[in-house]
Amino acid sequence: MYRYGGGYEYSAGAVVLIIILWIIGIAVWFYLNRASVRANRQIELLESIDKKMNAIIDLEIGKMSSMKGSYDSCSEESKTPEPTNIPIAETLKEHFLNKKK
Image (cartoon, rainbow, N blue to C red):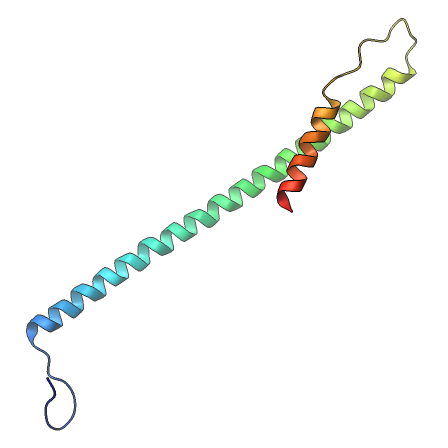
């Protein structure tokens, strides 16, 4: 209701309703903000896992490449079958690198 002289006059029920809506709004904001922070943290953790996996894959590719080089320098009698997981490691590396793009 509007009263003469400016300003509004609110009943006690309207004030209580405004306070309740304000508290509900704060609670909704809190939970949405909390969910957003948790999602950002999970993204950071997944990115760190991805970096570590790429480092492990690079290390394994390096090991396999050095094994292949030593395999080529061996005599025919001492050669064992060539490791078959080199293409798999390279494929995995390409897969992870293409995911980031």
